[in-house]
Image (cartoon, rainbow, N blue to C red; front, side, top):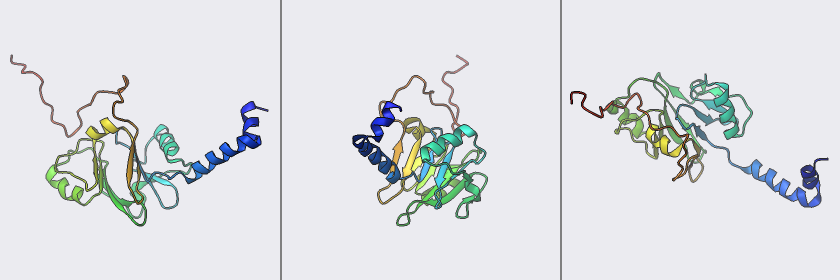
Length: 198
């Protein structure tokens, strides 16, 4: 018998094992998961499963999201869920505990986003999420997440209970050589660094 297993089955080893199992059982599941690039979002559904913003995500993303969510249930397509409204560019839905529901607005298109057109939609959303840069007129009531903020926070897990919380994968001071420098997104205007005529 394996020594670690024998120790776990011993009377003294059973207590830590039981505490760990109970802790895992009562660990809250995230209401919303956002990948570090903002491209993929998984939203918790009432039946315990999750729905993906981009349902054609590959196995790597699905496996990563399933592990982060602590589920082995298959993912639904967010656009197919009854309470979700989607057009070509965005999906909007409510998320969270019964006592406090949050309106989520998430981008899924590739077209340029005009600030004037976005302002009203962002103003009635609690959380706005985009994998690209958002215009300055787009401000969510609680949190606005775009390419710039994700470069600092990394992936995010949202727990939308009585006291909502967003848990980031990166912390202040995290500086890893494998992190890529910030890139221009579809909404960024290219600014020349030098005058070629000189």
